[in-house]
Length: 346
Ligand code: WQD
Picture 1 (cartoon, helix red, strand yellow):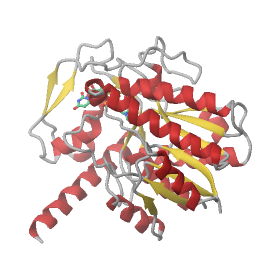
Picture 2 (cartoon, protein in one colour):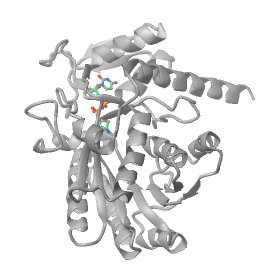
Picture 3 (cartoon, helix red, strand yellow):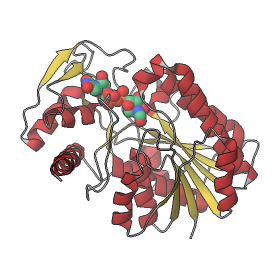
C-alpha cells in the first residue's frame, strides 16, 4: 500500500483528500501544526474511513522537525502539499508573513522529498495564479497575469519553485489549480471550519443564514457580468478531493507527459455571487439578509475553468452541481450549530 504524506491534513481540502485517498487504497499520514486548524476534524475523517489518522503536529518551516517525519517514515512514496496560509485579505496586510510561511514550508518539504527519495509530489495551487484573465474560460496554458494578492503571488512562486525542483531532482510533480472549493462531505462528519468572520462567499452565506451574523455584503454589483456581481467557478470539495487521488494514480502509473503537469480543477461553469445566493435561498428555503456593497479590493471580475485536460487525462468527472454544493454546506452549518448548542447545554 503506498504511503502518502498530506501536509495541512487538518485543513478543509486536506481532510477531504485524506478521506478520498484512504477510500481508494492509499495509506495516509498527516502533518499539520494546527496553527489554523484543529486535529478534531481528523476524528470525523477517521469515522468515515474506519481508522485513525496519524497527524504530526509540526511547523514545516522548521526543517529539522520536518526531516524527523521522513526519518520515521522512510516508506513515504508520495506527498500532497496543502499546508499554507490562504486568506487573501490577510495576505495584503501581512505579505512577509505569507511569503515566509508559504514558501519556507514548501522549500523544506521539497528538500525532504529530494533527500528521502520521495518520487511523487502534488502541489496545491489555485486559479488565483491566472490573476485577471483576458479571456475565459481559462486553460492550463492561459498566461499568468500579476497576482491580485501576496497570497496569489505565493502560489505563482510555489509553481516556479516546484518547476525548478523537478528539473534538478528525480521528483515527478503535478500542480492542481483549484477554482473555488465549497461544500462538505455528504456524511457531514467533515467540512469547512473558517477561523473568525469568513472572507469566502459560501461560509459567509451559511453563517449569515444560521444567524451568526445579522447580514452580509455582496462586494460589488457594478461589474461587467450578467447581473453585475463577480463570477466564479464553484467546485464541490469532494470533487476536488477525488482529483488528488486521480493525480496520484496518474503519477504512480507513470502517465506524466510533462514534469510538472498542470490541471485546472473547476466545473467549467461560472456563477455570479447573486446567482449563488439565490441558489442557496431556493435550496434552503431561507431568505438571506444581504446588502449590495462596494467592490472588494483584489477581486477578479470573472473566472472559470476549461477543465477538459483533467477530464481527459485524469479521468476526472465532477459529480456535484451547485445545488449539491449549497445543500452540503448548509447541512454542515446546521450540524455545527447543533453541536455548539449541545455543547452549551451539556
Ligand atoms: C468569491 C466572490 C467576493 C464574501 C479566494 C482565493 C482562492 C481561494 C478561495 C483559498 C468574490 C464575493 C465573498 C462575501 C461577497 N483561496 N463575496 N461577499 O476571492 O474568488 O477566491 O478564495 O483556497 O485562491 O483567491 O473567493 O469566496 O472570497 O469570493 O460578495 O461575504 O464572492 O467579492 O467576488 P475568491 P471568495
